[in-house]
Structure formats: structure tokens, C-alpha cells
Length: 113
Length: 112
Image 1 (cartoon, rainbow over the protein chains, first blue to last red):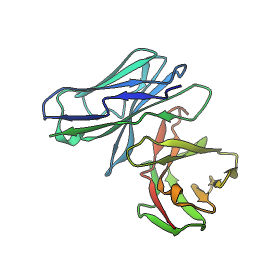
Image 2: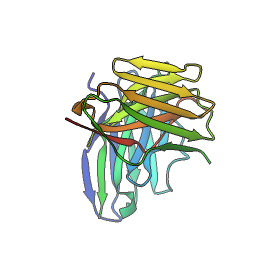
Image 3: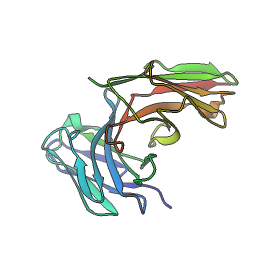
Image 4: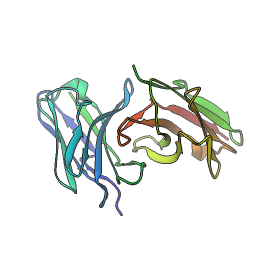
């Protein structure tokens, strides 16, 4: 298996622009998680899905952030409009319902100027 | 409030020694605790899981202990090698058992 796939790997954008991050979970995994990692705050859970349904989005910073999972093999995290404080590494992870281990993607490094 | 605390200072040890990393938590009642390794520019990789009813877990040169009374886990790497240099994260499950909360990690540097 290719593991969790994220794109793009790097994104540089200007403040106010829309940013879309993409994730393909491991086939057969029914849980998908979006995290954000910064030096100051560490790795924070933003939102997670079970069988494509959002279960807990309490970690989403504000209304500028939205996430969707239209099918079992694809999820997006969108920031609109982006701000410099959104600069971070965004990780996607997936797992099965029967195993507690989470498998992380390589991350998207976002820089908002 | 809930907190997961790991040593913020980097741990520097000599090759061959045992590295011990600490994870303390407050206001959690986790069913299990996990340790992950993260290399620069990469996502975290799962290492070990220990459940609340387990005191100790081993995997090759790795050992994890879990004391739910002290609310602490210790992560040991015996016979450490330069290749063990990385950041190590501990993670606790939320009440749902599916989401994880992570500590900020401890950076380990093993020098030859």
C-alpha cells in the first residue's frame, strides 16, 4: 500500500487567498484525521471523520477552515481566506475501527505570506 | 484543563546508553497511550501502544511503562544508536477512543 497520500507537499500563498489541502487515506481505513503542527502548539487535532461523516470538528480554529470527505478515498481541508497565522504543517492520518494505530501522511507545509 | 507534558528540552545521550523519555498527563483517563517517532520533514510513525491495564510493553530495544496512578508513561530506548535520533511524541486517546491528543514531543539526539 502507498500509505496516506497528501498534496501538495508545499504550498506558499498570500494572505487572503484560498488554500486547499488534499488527502487520500489508506484503502480500507474508515477513520480520517486532520492535524496541524506548529512549534508553539505542537500537533493539534482539527477534525476527524468516520465513514466519510465528520464526527468532531471542535478543533477547527474558526469558520475560515472547512473540511470535507466526499468519498472513502478523498478528503480536503480548505482555508478561506488564509492568514499568516495559518502557516504550519498540516497532516492527514487514517486508521481502521479495529486498530488504534494512526498512519500519518507526509504532511503539507503551508506558508502564508 | 487537559494537559500532556513531555520534556521540552532536547535529550542528548551517548551511543550505547539508555534513553528515557517522560510523558505526564493531567485530567485524562486514557484507555491507552501511544508513542510515535517523528523525523524532520515527515509525519509521525507509530512505535508502541500500552493499555491502561498494562504496566509494561516491550518491542526490540524499546520499552514503555504506564502508571495510571502517577499519570505517567516512560519510554526507554536501550543500546541507543545515532539512528534513534528523532522527536518522540506521546499520545492519549480521547473519551471516544478514536481521536488522539499529542504531547509536543521530546527531541532525542544520540551521538557516536
